[in-house]
Amino acid sequence: MRTSTTFLGSLDNVCRMAGLYYEEFTVGETIEHERRRTISESDNQRFCDMTMNQQPLHLDAEFAADTEFGGRLVNGLYTMSLATGISIPETTDGTIVANLSYDDVEHPKPVFHGDTIRAQSTVTEKRETSDGERGIVTMCVEVFNQDDDLVCSFDRTILSLKRALEE
Image 1: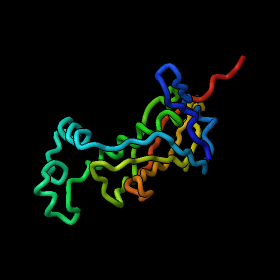
Image 2: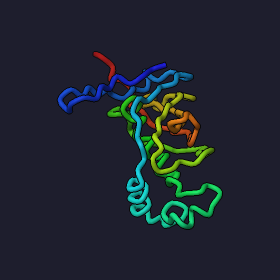
Image 3: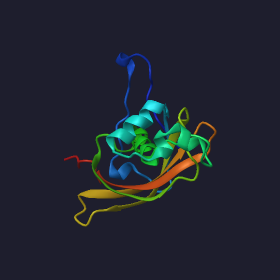
Image 4: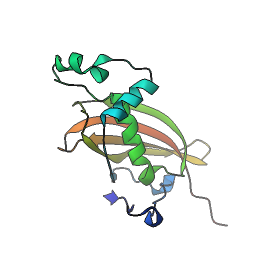
């Protein structure tokens, strides 16, 4: 299991691990992402505003109180986007050509304001492109809350750089 080597202290002491090149991904490997994020009401509100999502389940406390959830839920696309961002330093920071797809998205449990989420990525597939110059990697990203409940999962497929050949 790979873990982040990011150390948070003063900004002068931040040491960032670069993303992985195609050759460095191993099928079956799980990468634990050490970064966590507590989701605030304003995070959810801003995301809904930016995406023009006016679903009352996310925004209207009175409406949401009368649902089976008993309160407002964090927008599921925000949870997914945040998990992708959390995963970038240890997977694709500086080594990605493009995100190709997000598939099999599931939200088995709700996320509420004040929940703290973390993520892990498991490499499920990899192959070289037809020209052999790059690689395609698929990872299953799982998102957990502070109680270790799975709150979101999805497959992320990327087009990855390969290491430059040394001459």
